Amino acid sequence: MKTLTHDALVYEEMDGHPVMYKNFHKVLLSQANIEDIMGSSQSQSIVVSAIFQHLFSLLNRKTHWILTNEAGLHLGQGNNLAADLAVFDRTQVVPNIKNFQYVEVAPLIVIEVDIKADMSDFPTPHDYYRKKALKLREFGVRKVIWVNTQSETVMFDDELTSYPWTEPIDLSSIVPGLTLSISEAIQAF
Image (cartoon, rainbow, N blue to C red; front, side, top):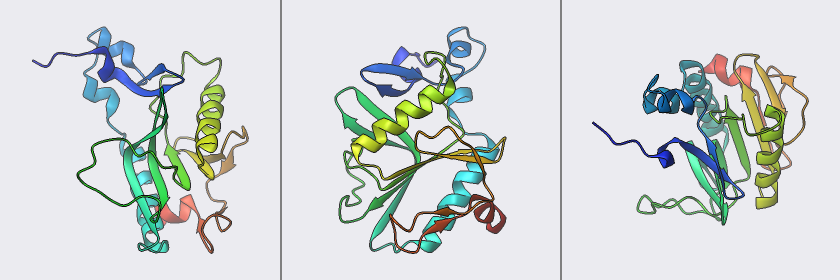
């Protein structure tokens, strides 16, 4: 039997404070296994995979690199965040399978799908979105995209307005010619 430590239930760290996985209390109360709260839903997995496939087909792999799977981003002391998808300028980060540390370079774009964070320590869920987006933007991320599979909506950066995911997202100011449509990516998947 595995020994469970408190650290295993930490999803991210902001300003030196842990942000726990959603439903971490269930694990502490033996009502769920840690794998139950860490894994992705089918919906989240499909949407992340569809977006990855879409971006992979559009981006030049010699100039851009896409990380997935809750890519760890080390923003600085006490600030370690996760990203479902992160698009990097390949000249800034060289892929290295022997580097076991979080990435310390800001991606151009971060895309989050169905957040796994417990937001109970924030006044509202939007306070979590706002704080994480601001931290990422201060780190140098040019665009943060929040995707919600249940409502089929998208939010940007720290903005609190949701848009239908059928609307194309113009990212050409970051990567010339790049437009992302979540619904088209899913349909093509």
